[in-house]
Image 1 (spheres, rainbow, N blue to C red):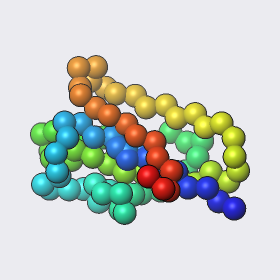
Image 2 (image 1 turned 90 degrees about the horizontal axis):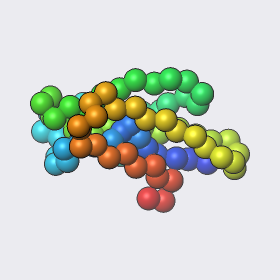
Image 3 (image 1 turned 135 degrees about the horizontal axis):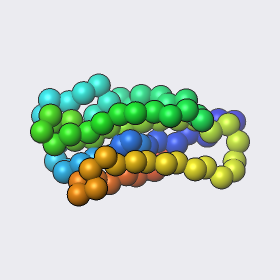
Image 4 (image 1 turned 120 degrees about the vertical axis):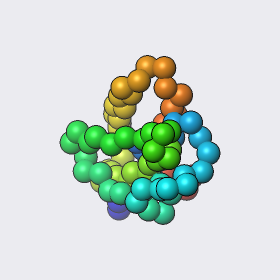
Length: 89
């Protein structure tokens, strides 16, 4: 059985600055999450100036176990949040 984890940053899920996306990119809402491969480096960005304030990503875990996710922010002073969610919330 496949297990599903949603990341809403990535708001993996990351949102910087909050508020709705006025000119959204293709993964600005949960149902538009883009799949990520496991064990690969993935680069994406969110920007307040460009109105891309949130990104959603999705990845599948084949079996129970420990999961390690590393998120790096280029701007230390940025006000960003990352959420890791399962398919229920």
